[in-house]
Picture: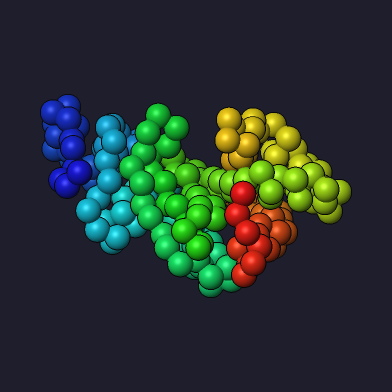
Length: 186
């Protein structure tokens, strides 16, 4: 992975004098200089710096605050950066008890929080679905397909504050129940 994989055209682009650029032109330049291929910095600090470049400062601060809150509230014991693919530029996977608890998906100027539901968690969600806000939680859950292994990965656009609050205060505590001692795994 290592060093930034700039293309030759990107290297030429980097030589442009930017002091007279507008905010929009600088933002366009930032996006143009992001790596085009799979890229993962070698260090944790490098990954956070790359994440800041992807989503911009304002959203990056929100992302960092959410990561800290989720780690603190739900006892996350492992976090792993993953290189991007055709869906996103970068992933930040949060694990608890060796299983994926949730994952941040970062793309140009936005990020999502993906929450995985295994078979047992899906059954419980279906039994309790009326306790979740319809538009904010139930609808995104309903439109996601069930994978061959019986799991479901639901992506929440948490830029909107009411969605973020619902996911962090309702969905993640619901999910955390399945990581408690003796909850088992399916």
